[in-house]
Every structure is written in structure tokens, then in C-alpha cells.
Image 1 (spheres, rainbow, N blue to C red):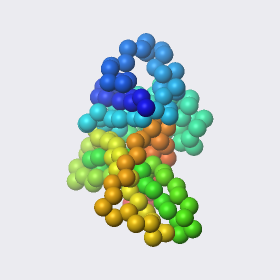
Image 2: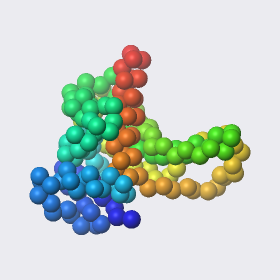
Image 3: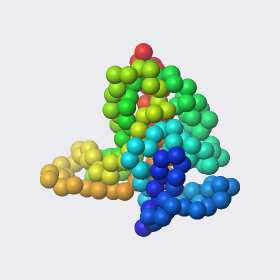
Image 4: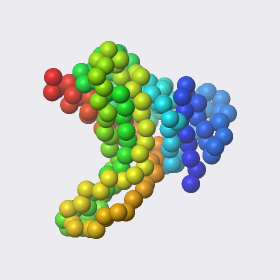
Length: 173
């Protein structure tokens, strides 16, 4: 499987090499890569990720309920209700008591004491270790289950889960 890595300052690597695609063709490259494994360079911020996702605005608008412009404005505004320093994207495997299996991308956050930072400098990273929520009795002790994130799953975590997190945080204050 090919790996697309989103780096700092909008740099994109594909299969270990810096991508050299004209700026106007970046949208097409990203669209053809939505099912590819995605990685994030250490220290990438939400603002840098949103700058990369700018090329997918139309896709985001048609695929997700949330719009790129709304989330980008919130991240860029500097207004924070619930300060965080990091967003971690991971997968959760849910095994129902009936034995149904579902794997979904989720987010968790690391709290910050600094209210003035805003979301633009919050880092985002991917944790490929799957969290198992088991209602069936499936024995998972001492097993590390790993599932790599795709670009589409990362988009879903940012434009659904993170947007929902911000909405819930604002509603709690």
C-alpha cells in the first residue's frame, strides 16, 4: 500500500519522496489518494492540515455534512472554549454483544492550560493502535491490533469528530 505523508508547511510526501506536482494538480492527486494510507509528520498543526485540505474543499462539501470553510474559520479564529494542545486520531473497533464488528476513526485530545493559543497551533497526530470496545467477550488481552489510517478516514475524523468536539465544548460552557 502506498503512503501519503502530510508534512509541515504543506509539504506532501508520496512513497517516501517529496511530491512534485503543480499546485493546480494537487486536488487531483489527493482525490486519487483518499483510500491510501496516510501519515502525518511529527508536529503538524491543525492549521497546516487545513491548508492541505483546502485543495479538497469541494470534495469535503459533497462528502461530509461539515464544510471546510466553517471548520477552517474556527481553527483560524484564535477563539477557544476548551483549550487543547494536541488532537490524536485513532481507530476504535467496536464488537457488539451480537458479534457485529465496526471499526471507526475517532479523536481524543490532550488538554492545555493555555487559553490564548487558539486551535491553529494545536498539533495533530495519528495513533495506529486500535482501541477495542468489546461487548462480546472477545479475548484481546496482550494483543496489539494495528490499523493504518486512510486519507478518507482522517478527513472524517477532522470534519465530523473534531467539529463535533468543538460544538460539544462550546455547549458545555
